[in-house]
Amino acid sequence: MEKSQGKAGICGHKPKDAKHVKETLQNDAAPWDGGITQAIYDRRSIRRYTAEKVPHESIEEVLKAGMRAPSAKNRQPWRFTVATGKAKEEALDAMEKGLEREKENPLLPESTGYLQGAWHSLGIMRQAPVVIFVSNALGKEIGSAMTVDDRVSEICNAQSIGAALENMSLAAREQGLESLWICNTFFAQKEIRDWLGAEGEPYAAMALGYGDENPPARARKEMREVVEWRA
Ligand SMILES: Cc1cc2nc3c(=O)[nH]c(=O)nc-3n(C[C@H](O)[C@H](O)[C@H](O)COP(=O)(O)O)c2cc1C
Image (cartoon, rainbow, N blue to C red):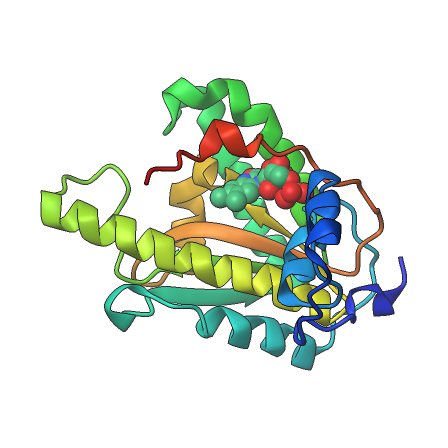
């Protein structure tokens, strides 16, 4: 995949006529060329990466976009741990131990059917040159008792972190990079928390690198299935 492919730029709307918009939406294509909507429509979860090293500056641009996300009460609850090289291997060895432990002593007993998928995610993370772990610095340990206030706060912080991750996945494309948002890390929550050794609770990881596949857009539900219009 060409590095320049994602460099179209995510600024500068060029609205086309309404008829075109309707047609392209039906075809799952972006209604505008070169704008932020195009970046949203063109993003894919990428599960194969080349071994090419990612420049430090590109990773910083991705992180800066994450840090520009809105957050509840501007709490900016995100913390990022960028793992490359030996550190990445150590983190993923910890995740592997967690997946092994999950077989015997599951943290997520009702999700064992998805454990195989977690092994697949681990393989992708091993291949990607960069893995960014994203924690909720204000998060309570999973499984701990929560008041309703705590829970609302967690939900708001989770939304804020989701916004950061989406910003990052779009900014990655502007750097010619691809990404995969990963929550299968939850199967190894304890082991990843221990490896991070920081305050807060791990929420997700993002694999980052130059893409080595070009998958078609994955299906989305129809608007009528997910939207109710009221007037
Ligand atoms: C919160 C969240 C968690 C995800 N976790 C994983 C994961 O652990 N492993 C994985 O391969 N994909 C993961 N994905 C990617 C989704 O599978 C993907 O977004 C979805 O299938 C739609 O495909 P697309 O992103 O290419 O449009 C995750 C996405 C989100 C938003």
